[in-house]
Structure formats: structure tokens, C-alpha cells
Image 1 (tube, rainbow, N blue to C red):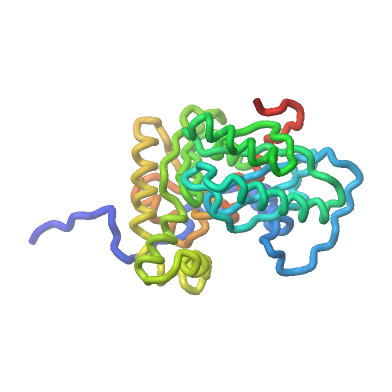
Image 2 (cartoon, rainbow, N blue to C red):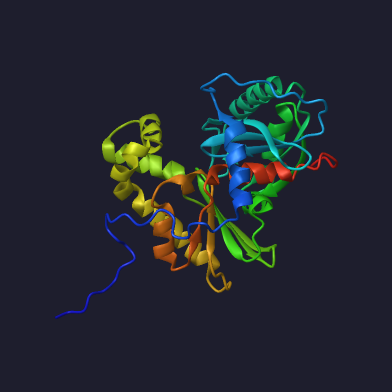
Length: 307
């Protein structure tokens, strides 16, 4: 009898969604729950009571993602106050491809949030995937400023995520719409960053092709919890591609575990596939989509203008 050979590809078997439950302190999960309650999707599905504020010394973060734009507002103690997010295709693989569209959307989001908090937003930090050319990093700042906000600083996305998670030794993997960003954290410091194309947009493209539907239809289908079990076998190869990217970049760097953030990490089964492919324990916070935007806002010092 021939011995069985284990392959990294597990066919259509669906792994556990959360290989390391309870991996984050309750305070972190409560923080993210608060963010989910006040950073609302566009259009808001319910009436929102105005937030009474008496001063404008706030921290603001703008996350220009491939699939979503997120505007997050914190108070001086980094507590989430308000925000908005919406689907938009103005960035591709970490690069701004529709400058005017990005500015128009961000300006409208800014006005919506200002109505809620009763004061003007004047500044914000933003972020970029690691490895993006300097000219494109500047383009991100230009979008923020053209929307009426002084861009105080820019930070790479995985490092922004660690502003919230405060991990000491891990690799933070920010799986967004278009790219997978990696930051190796040792003793609380970022010692290595990288970024490669592959993310949630690739899920959508695969679904659209497999089911012969439009990109927009596939995007909506992907977000339906009732459909995700059926879609899992279709998108699993993309998850494994993410796993291969991670494995290549953490090799030889004494990484003991992985922390997944970003909207794509929400897809059921994602963490399990990454864990089985890389052989490393994987942690996922309960609301991974909000980690990076909050970390960006924490980085807003509103003192020095980005140059």
C-alpha cells in the first residue's frame, strides 16, 4: 500500500474559521466593537443621532483601500467617535487610479461625518501598502488634502494595525482588497515590511468568472453570509496564494505566529487556510476590517504636515 502524502491543498474541505479563539485581550475586542458601532456603512441604514462635541481636537484617519474607503474619527484618548466607510474602486493594488473619484468620495464622507459630530474635520493621517513607490505615497496624501484635510502623516498599513493590536512578536498580515501587506514585529518594533498584489478583489474576480456574473454582482454575493460556504471552494486558491506570499516573506525571520487583519480576513475559512498552508498559528480579531483605519487615526498627530 502506498503511503498517503499530505498536500497543502485540502480540496473543498472547509477549515475552522478561527484557529486561535480568544487570542486578543477583551479590551481590544471591546475597542473594535465600539468602532463598528460608530463607523457606519454608506448609505447609513438608520438615523444617526448627532454627537455633541465642544472642540475639534480630534484624531482622524483615512484608509484608501482597493475595495473600501474608511474615514475614522477618534478623541484624544483614541476612543472611536464616528466614521463612515463605503465601497469604491478608486485604488488598485495600492495605487490611486481615480484621483478625482477618490477626492469626491472622501469629501462627501467628510461632510457626512462633520454633520454627525457638529464640527469641522481639518486634518488626517493616511496610510499606504509597504513597498509602494514614493510618488504614489505622495498621491495618497494629495487625495486627503484635495478633500479639504491637512495630511499630517503617512504610515504603512501593517504598522498602523499594530497601533491598535500592540503586538510584541508576530507578523501582521493586512489582507485588503488588492494587496497583502506584511510587517514582521519583534519586541514591538517593525523590522521588515513587504506588500504584494492579491486580496479580496481577486476573490471577487474568481467568483465572477466561475459563476459568469458581473464584478458588482460577485462583490455583493461575496459579502452574503448565506453564500460563503458555497463560494469557499472557488476562492480557496486565492487564499492559498496569500499563504504562499506570507510564507515567502516570513521565511528565516523567526516568526512564531501570524495576525490577520483587513476586510478579506473576515471571509470564513480564511484564517484556517493560512494556518494550514504556512504551518503557523493564526490570530484574527473579531472585526479585522476596522483595525488598520483605527491605527491610522491613532497616528494623526496634527502637528507636522507631511512633506
